[in-house]
Amino acid sequence: MPRINLLPWREELRKIRQKNFGIAAVGAVLAAAAILLGALAFYTAKIDYQNARNAYLDREIQVLNDQIKEIDELETVKERLIARMEIIEDLQTKRPEVVHLFDELVKAIPDGVHLLSVKQTGTRITISGIAQSSSRVSAFMRNIDSSPWLTNPDLNVVTTADSGSSGRTSSFTIVATQTSPGSTEESS
Image 1 (spheres, rainbow, N blue to C red):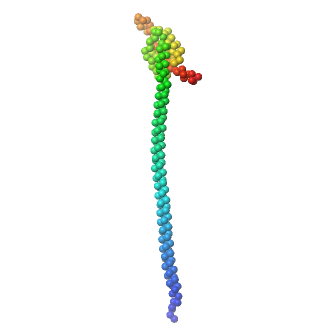
Image 2 (tube, rainbow, N blue to C red):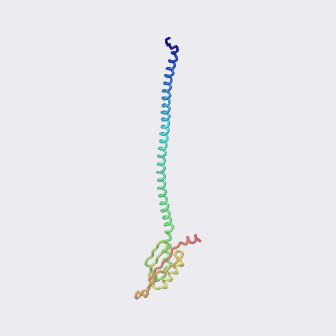
């Protein structure tokens, strides 16, 4: 008997299943590729967004660093100005002291004493002069010591020489300290 396939529908069903399986496999591959591309695009967008945020933060940090430099420069300028103001203020407070110093020197100089130079370094005053005698130099030192603006007279150099017809003269150098009566009262 001839072989007759009575069930051709099984072959057709198998071909349809294979075709459907192929379509499903291709669809799954395409879906997987689409998902991968979508995920890649999503994460690339996230990375780009984060890089943009980082770049923005870097720019803002640079702006803040520039502002910090400017503030530091302003602080330096401020310190210099404060130092200048303190110097000016110190000079303003010491301005009358020079007047008092010369006034006290005039009061302290006895007759027969002539000053050749007065030099001030800080609060130390070096006085050079000529006196008719050593006793006048001693009187000058006592007057300096009793002055409220001058203290601690120290005789550094005294030389006596014959000056011809006027007798003997004494050249002297005295070092004294300038004080301010207001500052000694405040510290007491």
